[in-house]
Amino acid sequence: MAPPLASSEHLLLWARNQKCEIPQDRVYGILGFLDPRIVAKIEVDYSIPVWKAYSPLVLAENEVYQKLNMLNRCNIITRYEGYPSWVPNWVSRSISYVPRELVSSS
Image 1 (tube, one colour):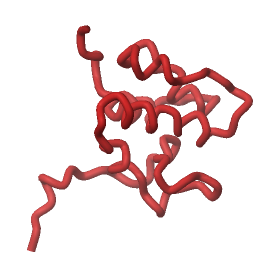
Image 2: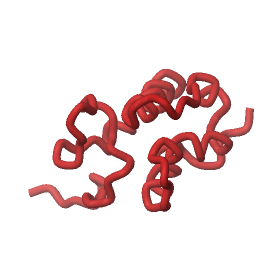
Image 3: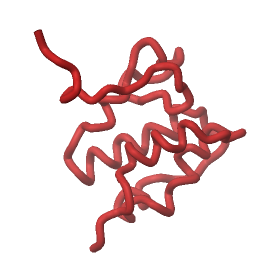
Image 4: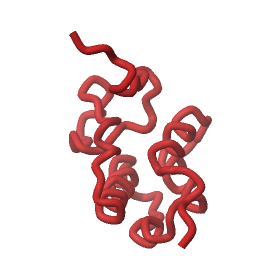
C-alpha cells in the first residue's frame, strides 16, 4: 500500500488555517488524502460536537500507526471546555507549534 500523501497531523495543520464555515470540515475535508485504514475508522457525522469529529482521527491514527504524535498538538490553553484533554483543538490558531528539536534545552 502506498503511504498517504501527508500525515494527518500536517494536513490538519494546513486545514486549521482554512476558512471552514463548519469546523468538522477540518477533518472531513481531508479524508481523501489520508491512509484508507484511518478513513475506514471515521464516520462523517455533522450532527455531533466538533471534538467528537476530531477524536476518531486521533484514535485511528494511534491505532493504525501505534504513535501518539497527535498528542503533541494538545494544549490546555486552547482546549475548548468540554473537549477531552487528548483531543487537539484544530480550530484554534492562537498557539504556534515549535518542534522540540528546535527548542534549546538548558
